[in-house]
Length: 112
Length: 113
Image (cartoon, rainbow over all chains, first blue to last red; front, side, top):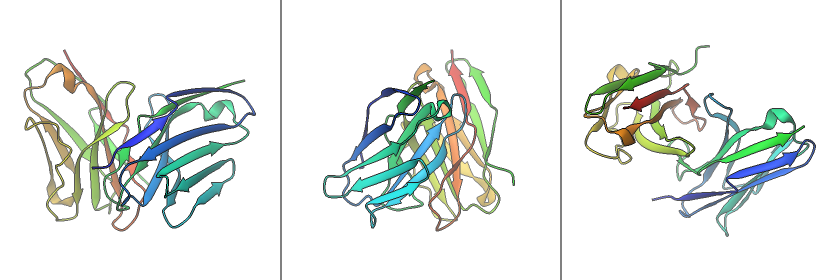
């Protein structure tokens, strides 16, 4: 089955700096890669996703890149703000709409 | 509109007892998923329902875990003879058929003493 590794497990940045979180996956059949943000005590919420037919997708301060050859994808947050502080999870699935395999999560702390 | 709801929000039980966790998906969502999130860990897939198809139970950790979905809507996750290692937040998610985004419920925090 699919295995997703996520790094780093914790990340502390200064407000205004950029943050990058990286994930690798094992199943070459995976073709849908969402990123979820989970604030303390809250439910995970989708913030951005990418399919395997594109290499990059951007939404305001958030971008995701995908390298299918190397089987890794990354989340980039620019101009970080304190409200970006949360746990971020990457995930992968071979079939969009099917169950997701999640990475272990990254706790991002943005210091004002 | 209403999102995915789960009940109870918290459940404390004694080792060996059975528990039932409930999930109400978003109306019209045909796909329903159960995940488990242990403290400080990622989300672990448990079981997946899609319409009237047989559920994908490949993530259930033992035969003490079972789930059903009645009428294609509400789902119940049952854990029999609970163990301390079952303590976790159990999250339910739903999605529209053919759509990729999974919408999560608030979770049920299960504590087994």
